Length: 113
Image 1 (tube, rainbow, N blue to C red):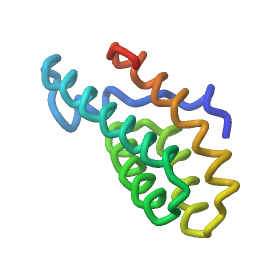
Image 2 (image 1 turned 30 degrees about the horizontal axis):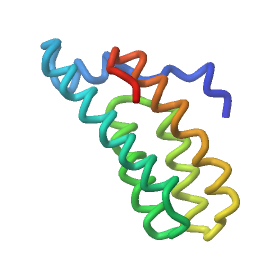
Image 3 (image 1 turned 90 degrees about the vertical axis):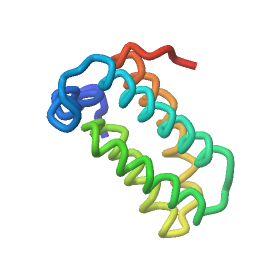
């Protein structure tokens, strides 16, 4: 999964979905990042594979909505591994969340935790 070649997220997709009002777009970006950070914390904070699959699924959907393809791919891989009860793969993959969420936040111009 070469993340450097995948755009962080597609802002044009947001404009298409929500219009080009800067305030609305900033709100959507902030909401997405809150969802992404929360899901990443849930996934990293447990070994409960059902909870991990649920959080990864939520993040996969939110990432797909805004065109955050790399983050969507990571979430999809984590969800698949969790459903396969492959905890070692989940543990390896979940370390990819924070750097990718950080990249999306930087592109959006949202303060990074």
